[in-house]
View (tube, rainbow, N blue to C red):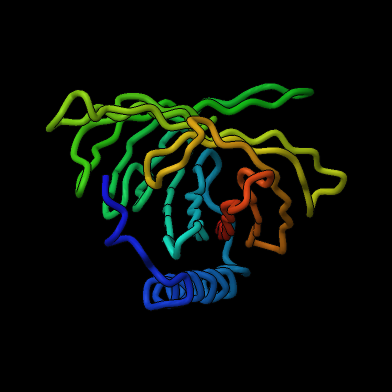
Length: 216
């Protein structure tokens, strides 16, 4: 897979458009909150909608940079999600899933999903869990099917910040390692969550990822 057309400047037009979009989301959320702050509560039993917007900026070697945005919508058991540059560069995907959760002392969440992948890679991804494990079946060439993984293990000394380790298996960009590993640290401010990752820190050219997630 060629990466030559994916040499995006993280401070270029793609990032600027994404920043404007996230700012618009924040502004609209504040306006909605202000307009509904004195409104009566919804009828008992009604489930609220939850929307999350995230952007992961990948800083790679040899000026190979790109942005990976994700938008997800949840209401009760219903989960809807769309991504770009996740399964492959210049590739989008749309997902329909079901949320399951439970536990008191140890809480858990499970979201099996079925999705369609379109763009440079076209196919279906029949199952995904909240642990970010995904198998994509390429509709054009079966030998190009692949398995993605993103896993984090973190400690949170306080509600607003955390740190830990992360692993990733991806085909979006080339790496000498089948499974990349790294360190991460993040903090939260109101509706926004910010996280920084460094993959393969022991190499001469480590990979950096910066993530922003907005939920309302």
